[in-house]
Length: 332
Ligand code: MLT
Ligand code: MN
Ligand code: ZN
Image (cartoon, rainbow, N blue to C red; front, side, top):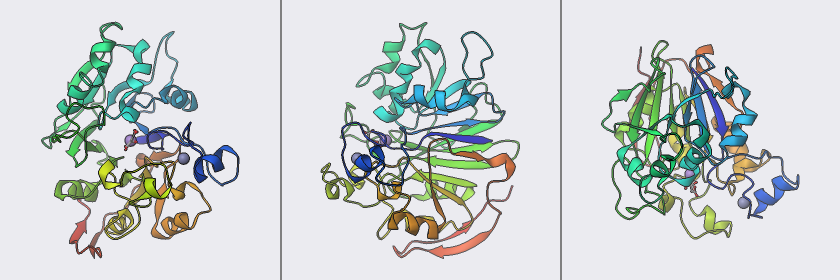
């Protein structure tokens, strides 16, 4: 199984078009050691030709141009994208469906809550009906059952419900439902190798922990370094937790959590433009290096078939937040 990181930034991208924060100004003007990043999306493939697009970002067009593997050019009009899976109905993850309209019909897997949002507050499904019948909705179950998207029989996807809110535009923004946000456990059936993908993760409950333990590679929420980062940077008023994100620093933060997975490959993804880890020379980046935590970049490739995962092991660990558990890699 191969994973291509098409876009490693959070909503807004990096630099964000209307932002002059230290990072955005710095990358735009070559004042910091950082690279620009597009909005949150990855693609997964078993054969390197047929790709499962996970989240459709508004930057999809540029992302496809930058990743020729996703355009195999087998016909006059053709794409390597075989189907799309969505983890939520946020604009940064779903608006790319509109950019893909010329390819209708194609299958889109999402929870029924996400489908509801994309049929009401942001009516992508009904809108696209005018393009060759539109996109086919395929339900992504949230009861722990694994599915294989059509054309991807060698892969299983398990949606793991996580805490979070529906997007600001959603009719049920203030009325949370299970399935508004999911993480994905993606496994290569033949090799058993797997990745856990959670671009938004505000905390850790039992099912999430179990899937993380089982995975070879963790690709998790890298949005904010600080809980009050938007306020600290002077660009917003909300705390990380109000936006459904767990910051890296602090007690019970992502760094502490990831210490429980010493044998796993750990990659932060969905990085907001305010986050100091985007500066390769920052002190915060040195902290991550010491912790063995990688920072995703556009064009990053993870080849799990080449054994870029970890060795099975068992570790008893605790975090300073008082959480204590045994981390056993599940044997296959
Ligand atoms: C988020 O996940 O909080 C988003 O990136 C917000 C957005 O897309 O504007
Ligand atoms: Mn986002
Ligand atoms: Zn910025």
